[in-house]
Image 1 (tube, rainbow, N blue to C red):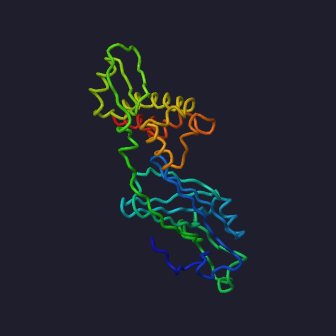
Image 2: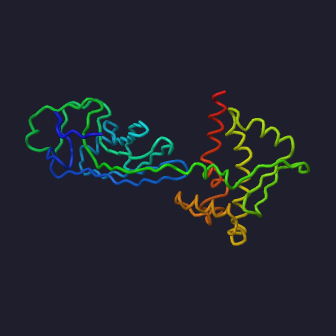
Length: 276
């Protein structure tokens, strides 16, 4: 997104001198974690009048995010100095451009500001809704494609049929996690695994199994570290800025960990059901 250097009204910007003794800066923190890109933005504004406009919802902070490779483009508004934006990773790939602004949230007539440069003092100023009052920092970052095959866990999870068990069982004492389903449940799983409800069905099987696995990790980390499935999960967590050894603690419950790995399976299930 190109930033204009010329506007028919004053704009607070580090590269012009429309204002004196005023600044607008932005700090960014971008994290890619379990299928979501979390962008935390922190604004720092030093201008009393523009701050008042934001407090009164006459102006708002705006973050514009654009990805040319996926054609993703969206603007996020807030009147908070710190806020977090969450975007599915599948929407962002390659170079991502993030720009920040303060814009008019409604028409502003007879605008005045004690910090305006002298040449604006006797000029009537009006901002239409959407006009830019201030331009903050911008960054370009790069998002790389996930190893989706690993995150979908086919390499370390096997679902099999049990002819003797009445309930689902999970075996973790080998390199692959084996989920054994009773005959009827397995037949339903096998028949419908590629239907329109495939994610819902997988969620019903995989989510409770992973909760069980993570609870056992917390109890017996040293005994399980030798297995391939443990090493794969450890890598997944490391690459997503978490620690597998924290799973089962107060900071990261087994239930939350399972939902992270499966990328919000409950939401995905309801979205599938909604489409029926």
